[in-house]
Image 1: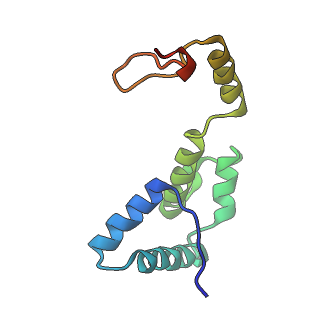
Image 2: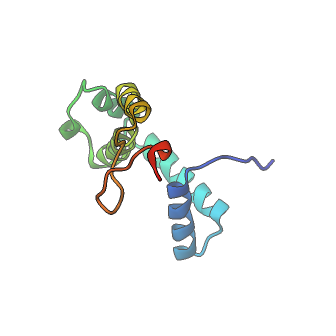
Length: 117
């Protein structure tokens, strides 16, 4: 039975690019990636618990295999791009005060929409 799943735009862009490159359908490419992931996770050189330990700062990334490091880095990069609760609170306070809340691609401060004229 077919199932619908929401994936981020960047993941879907990557899947589409790879599916075209590999002459697979989008569903076929996702299935292919899942099969690869299952093989890696079930291999003797990959231990997801060790990746969790590194993400929790209980183990050094240097102690991971190259396969584990690739997965750890991907998850680490994803976590680092998400704002923390403290960052969200900080920028919400700045928005309420009408102060800059980031940078535009032009290098100018980005102000809340209410402040834009």
